[in-house]
Image (cartoon, rainbow, N blue to C red; front, side, top):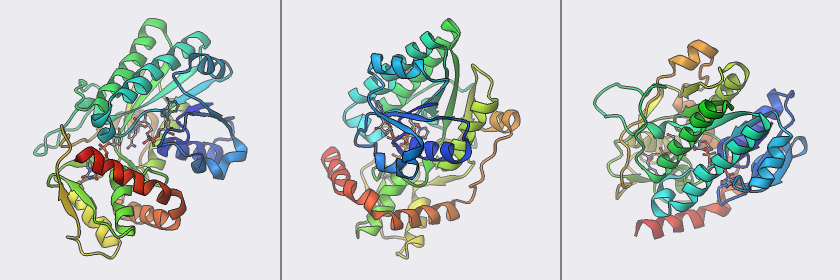
Length: 329
Ligand code: NAD
Ligand code: DAU
């Protein structure tokens, strides 16, 4: 199995999960180690995998690696919406050209591809209705990030239909758990509190996300690899919807701080109001269901992980906050 982006948040958790629970796979990780990639996230399984430091846009390297693999699981991406608003080009390059490069290699060598995507491709849902995205919802991306992920999904669909590549796609809701970069919402607020700063809430905090534990996401990916129908798309999510304000208050409460110890800051441009996935298809077809459906327990465990793994995130904290100050001013 070739795992692209395996030194990032979800990819590293996926590789650890695969080594522990799926010994039938021999895992090679391909990762260029951007600011978001960290080999230390693979330390617990370093002896069980092969790590290749390289770029998914490097056609020769990708061709060589795909040529000696059966299954490609494609996590590599530029993943942060705020960064995409500041500088969209790396998103076009990695998410679109990189996925294209991988697809061409997969087409040549006949490998199976699972493409990891996001619910953000569907755009936003209103706050005042209980609608959910389904596999048939038309694409309506808002940010440069989601537009490039939508583009990558479209490439995968076209390569499936025109060239018959053996591909599946999943679109997951927001993930949380260990090894998430401190730029993202929950780790940013958790580590702000741990470093004596206040959580930063965009707008008025009314935006809703569906919080899915990274282990549930990765178990769903394995269900798709084992039993998913080639050519199909599967939505993944927990059903756990929270406003950003509710989550900040929960982080503060679980950290022993007053629940109003946060700052309201200017809103994200084009900020999607709500995401929520209808997961009927993956539940009924593949028998997958999320195990981590209590956000209070999941968040408490995540806070404990960041408390116990300060060495992993602290070196990135100052640069991340400096980046936020530069971009927002
Ligand atoms: P991340 O930013 O934490 O990790 C991305 C990884 O990809 C990093 O290790 C980085 O070094 C690597 N990478 C970037 N460009 C590369 C390139 N050109 N060549 C090789 N490697 C490269 O991202 P994440 O949050 O783990 O997301 C992983 C995937 O899951 C992405 O495709 C993302 O769109 C998708 N996704 C994320 C979430 C979420 O909540 N984080 C939810 C749904 C889907
Ligand atoms: O829905 C899946 C997507 O979830 C993935 O495709 C993306 O890769 C991932 O980054 C995530 O995107 P979001 O934009 O939803 O996540 P982010 O962590 O950036 O922000 C979550 C919410 O919190 C969003 O409404 C913006 C808000 N926010 C974010 C930050 C960083 C704040 O209020 N304050 C903050 O400091």
